[in-house]
Image (cartoon, one colour):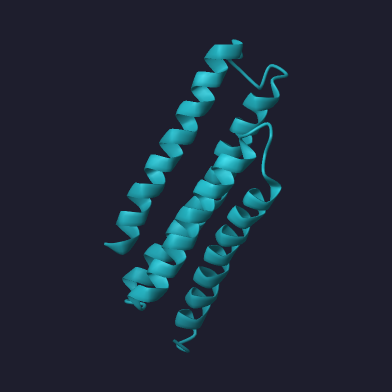
Length: 128
């Protein structure tokens, strides 16, 4: 159930990123692509980057939870992923992005991916 909670929260973040893209598309009248609009391009990439990372980490979390891995590992991975994706999404989608915020968001996301991956490998080989 821990993974389900994080999946639900991340789904809401994805919905928010989607709405930001749709609104900007309407504002600049770009039905496909970015229409040369820098802000739309950034919002599209924030949305896409989220879609590229989140599913794999959620799959890893699900596998770990099904194998009864410690709840603190699941919460560590989930919290890093959630906070990292929010920070990254807000920073990359701004024309005047804060590079440190974008980097912090990616660092948290990669931490989540790394911890989940290593935990899955350790569990698979009976080390954990």
